[in-house]
Length: 520
Length: 102
Image (cartoon, rainbow over all chains, first blue to last red; front, side):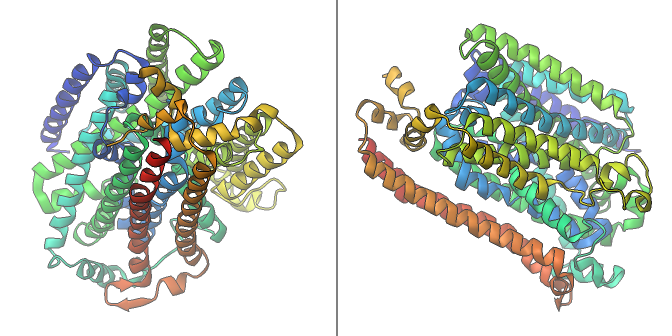
């Protein structure tokens, strides 16, 4: 791009600001409570924006806008799916999680059950979600930065990985939270300005924009099609994965611990739902704006599989400076999302695996922090190496797979641990492992891997006995995981889990009693 | 603002469990009803998307199809359901907890 010096300028301003925040946060990060939960000192309003920042990836702006530009309405299927999981978090998960857990969702699942087996299984599920999502993000980041700034792929991945390492390693949750807040505000500002600039061409009336799109490309762009989501049950399966996967995403759930109480946690989910909802409505306008004002052909020609729709639209309606700003916002977005993912992976490795499994539930603060920092370095290096290794590969399916695993592995055990007295340790372990494995096996046997990745002709494998026609595994994997959990629970008895159920319910209601008494 | 920690007084003087249980039951019922509403709205929409594309593609006006009305409505209803729950929790649930803990 000719004018990338301007976007690089914006980008360095963002880097300077966030590194200053990290320096400030580093001096306040002294305990694991700070490192993983920002000391519980984040306000509901800040956390709402941070949740939105954590959740809205570059895919939400560039990806969905691109899909809308080339396919019309169908892009909105993703926007809606990514939003409807938030009410589920609010209604079913936020209070138990906040009152029973400390840093991870495994705290809640393991509360009544055998700590070690449940936490190890939860770590498998969580790390699978995080690694697939992280690879998808890193590869997208590398190719997008190459496209937007002209920086070589390997350097882009290494740069993003290193900056994310600095945020998490030194600033922990406090720095990560503020990076998310700044990023979400920039993303929202960019999205709103872009949408408003589009609408100025259409008398501020979205219907005139849609009508113009229909005049140019036919009313089919305003109607549901089958290019983006093919297959009837596949659409339902995708919906399941997006809704319940969102409700069990580890990096989202972890944010619930950063506010002072469950009242603030509830409010922050409400704010996040509002911010994300408004943003998705803007993206819909942006996608149609790019369709009418830039044209799907020009977007396709720019490369990046449609991802250039929003930046090119910014160039068309706002000029060079705005183009630079949107590119920089996209970069900031990628950086912030990978930082949030890394931190939740670190929490699982340090808090679940090290402190609660290796060290039987108690380890000195200094040791936990050291382990957390080693884990941060490990995950960052792994993310960079995998990001580089998968260059040029089709990894878009990995983001969807991450949601499917979260939906099938994490959600059933979390809900049953909270609500069902009979739930047992073997059931939790079996449910999490079956959810993870069945998602992996089903996607391997589906056209997603067999046709798109391995390049086998569909006609040849369609008749094979093992062939799975669904591209999204959730509709099979999630009920299977629930079924396994229920059958194994009924087949086993666990006196202790049964006996502590009332205590857990009371704790869900009244919060961390013991801790408060100690403080008094 | 009363924090969850403040409720911890409950640990020293355990609240009468029947009243606590009643409140917990009420919360669960409202949570389940609202979840069911969200699931019905979303999967109702997705079922139309999956099984009746022509209906969802009905043109209501130039530039306006049924799906362009319903899609944003699903987004708005997500927010409104959250708002209902938060308002209920702030007005009924939190004071109820406070009374039990005191």
